[in-house]
Length: 140
Length: 144
Image (cartoon, rainbow over all chains, first blue to last red; front, side, top):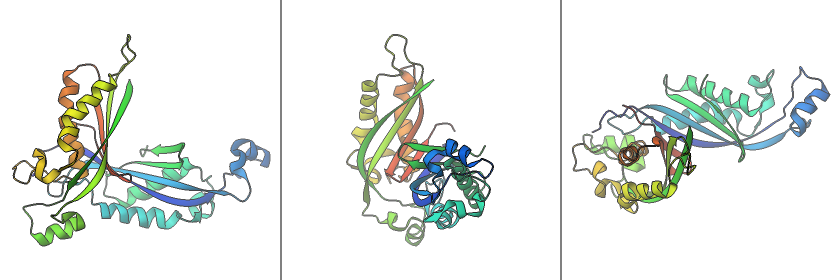
C-alpha cells in the first residue's frame, strides 16, 4: 500500500481557557511589578490558549497515518485539557513554585504529553497565549 | 538561510479505505471517514523553501514562479477533485496507491513539487504542510 517515506508529522490544535498571575516569591513586590508589569496584577487574568501538538513518525502502511487521531485526542484531553481548562494555573501543583508563564506552561504540556504518547512520537508543543505571542518546545 | 512560505487553498473530497481489510475493520479504524460516498475539505497547502536571498533581486525564489509551480503540479490536479477517484497516487485501482490521509497528501505534495524546485537550482524544498481543517494538519520534510 505504501512506499517507505521516512518521518512525517501530524498536528492538531486545541484551545483551553485559563487564568494566571505572573509572580515570583523570590522577588520583592517592586521587582515583581517591574518584571511582570500588568501580568502581576493581584487577581490574575485569563487567556484563550491554543495548544498545538505536533507528533512525528513513519506513516503506517495500513492506515496511512502517523498516529491515531483519537489516541492523540485522548492523551491531550486527559493529560492537559481536563487538567488546565477553566482553571487558575497558579493553583496547579506544577506552578506552586514556578511562575505560570507560557514558556513554563509549554514545557509542562510537552512533559505531560510525552509520557502519555508512544516513545519518540511527540515532536513539539506550541502554546499560543494570544494571536501575537506563542512559545514552542521541542523537548530539550 | 531564509525560509519562505507560500500558501494555497484547494477543495477536494476523499474517503479512507484499506482494500486489504473487511468492511467492518475499515469502519472500526476509520469511522465516518470510511463512508465510501466520500466527504470533502477546504485544504490549505503551505510550501516552504529555503535558501539565500539573491544578491541582485533579494529573492530566495520568485514568488510568482513558485505560485505557478504549485498551480501546475498540485492545484490543477487536486482542486475540486476526488482524491480516491481522480488523483493517480491515491486511485484505488493503482497497486502503489496510498490512502489519502492528510499525512499521505503532504508526502504526495512534496513529491509533486520537489522535482521542479530541485531543477530550478537555488532554493530547496524545506517543508510541506497540509491543513485539512484549521485545527488538523500534517507536515513532511522529505527524507526516507
